[in-house]
Image 1 (cartoon, rainbow, N blue to C red):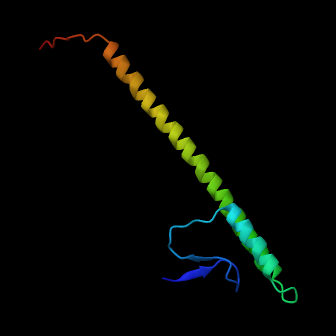
Image 2 (image 1 turned 120 degrees about the vertical axis):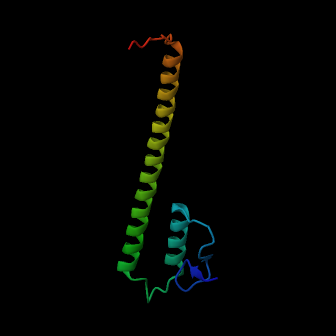
Length: 104
């Protein structure tokens, strides 16, 4: 099993790949703070890498929020569909059945 170091070159956190563990926003901020506090002041992390990581996390947060909103919409549509089925069933049950004769 391979693993990924969560902070460049340090032993702060190692997360196994495919372990099912997902890091959240708080974890990301904790790791970023640890990375900044542990970095060599004479050889800091490249600003472009830091900005790219923050942009990726921002995109991920937006996608996660979109997924939550879409799930909520899907749940509401499911509830409305079930309600419409109940209303239709009640209307059918309340409608008297008439027998028609076929002439011919």
